[in-house]
Length: 411
Length: 114
Image (cartoon, rainbow over the protein chains, first blue to last red):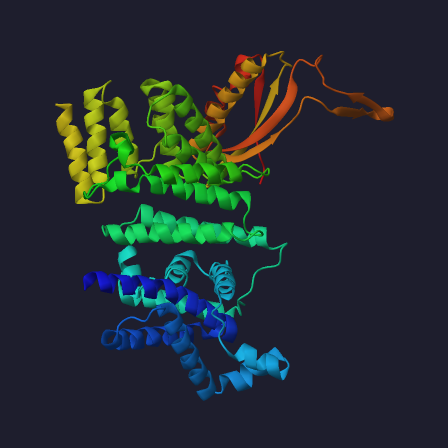
């Protein structure tokens, strides 16, 4: 029974995004909430009906038929179609008939979803609300799941989504692809949102493993969708997909059913997903066409080098140079710390310590953690005081415990 | 790349024309990347600037054009970066370790006006 419920949940999640995209495509993005309601009602009816009669042979087709009827009823009843949508269409009579019906062909579903991706990733919406909206509309996540992913509550998420949809209406965002000339620029924001979705899953605050994995898979699905369409299949798109493949390949090794993540150094290589690594390499090769080097290119190459477990000087020297380049495009304290770690692996503790002391990231517990790590074999007292600083700044109990273990190991 | 509000300084790099093997060139290039990377890691790089090729032309009075590469000039202008620092002294500290200095070049440090 549970398996049965999980299968339905999966089906609804998948179909939700398709159906909302197709309905919004026909009636206009300003009716996106109505589209959500129609789809939700359709799912309710499906659950009730299927409980008695069993799941039909083609459940998706069943859903589409019901959604079509519900949409027609709604828009007829509210005369929205006759008064607002029809006059704007200015079509022949037979075309009216054709247009008035929702088109759930594979091609139209695909087109509508791609257009929805661009619409949701409009720069007009603030990025936190945007990720929420993307999770809801593009990935079919429930409000409760989104709340859990953000460690927030349903009410806050609902408010956030409401504001984002209001913005879509007020800014009169259309469900259409940007012009060919506009695509490379608009694509940047789309890629950024996909990157954030993936990171939200990969580094999520939530302990819910399934949810985290789902987030990553959905982000990858959206990235792959962009590679299937010639105009969005640019080198930077491939770089982002490569990056996600490499990271995802270590997903199982990283967690392995424990609360604390297993750090890269301690991971069991046999748990790395070699087929994802190979896919990552294919996308990485595709990303090298053209002259543009984005942060996705650099991060994908760094992730590629991490797919070799053995420490070689070539590996860490390459990673160091990639971090050097990444810092020029995209400074962040974490990139600065990762760069210094690569420097340690390439040039040794002493060289890295000189650089690390310069960073002065005094509010960052990873900074003290790395200082402690580098002093470990050089100066026990300094290692200890740095670990203690790290422990004091660490945010979770699990992290504090992990650091205490390191202090204890110092002896 | 903003870490905090600070003054901006321009580093102008000059160095003699070097006759390096491809390996030597690669080695020097790597040192430059590590050095700029270190400044960037401190959140103190405001701009990676512009890097100049050794070839070019100089126009002087009377329409006299001299074409490079200017191997006879002791120090060729190689490019610049912009850094963030509180004071000129801090900027000079950042300039230390510049790989150009080790090969007979110099770094000119100038305050940039907003």
